[in-house]
Image 1 (cartoon, rainbow, N blue to C red):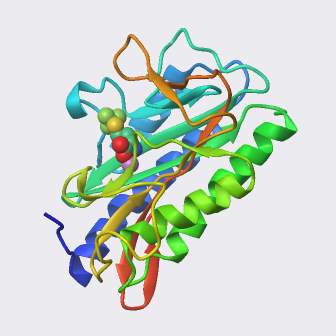
Image 2 (image 1 turned 135 degrees about the vertical axis):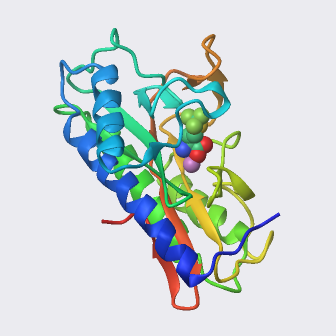
Length: 249
Ligand code: MF3
Ligand code: CO
């Protein structure tokens, strides 16, 4: 069931999304060689608590942290650890959410630790740009398939591949609501986009092939070929005035 939000609900949700975006900005600033992923998770927890909000991921399906921090060939859901030290040249994806006013915000971005390879930079830039390509077509009257088609066309034209097993999602009072938002699809297919829909759009893009594997910890998803992956996410509202990026500062 898709829950459409009123204008008033969207303004409450915007506050949760701003807190999420500010927490992500703080986490991103902390990315540098020598820092552990547990330290970044602590910064996220403290920021969210300081704003009187709650980490949306902590305890979600048993997830043990406030942020997912996925490095290099880790695609998503990397669990922060005091033994995981960020190294020079790492590509670090941070994903986090906050709950406030009864609503959830969800966002992610990929950061460079020191100098990264040109191909890592191109992967990260392309993934971020593809998110905005997907957001552009979040207009009332469009279809869910338009979003994934825009994202996959953009990334595949540049030689990268789209992870298919994990998708974006509706979001609101709950972290995951209907509909599912795949990063691939056919234009004009799928659920119609309506004003009041709120979607988390989150391309997960691989440098090599699209295949992934789940690690023994039950959470961490890595590329099957060991090559790099990047991830960007915004929470977006579809309105009669076009897409509104709720997690944009
Ligand atoms: N942003 C991710 C998602 O939307 C991470 C949530 S999984 C969690 O699916 F368990 F860590 F919360
Ligand atoms: Co999400």
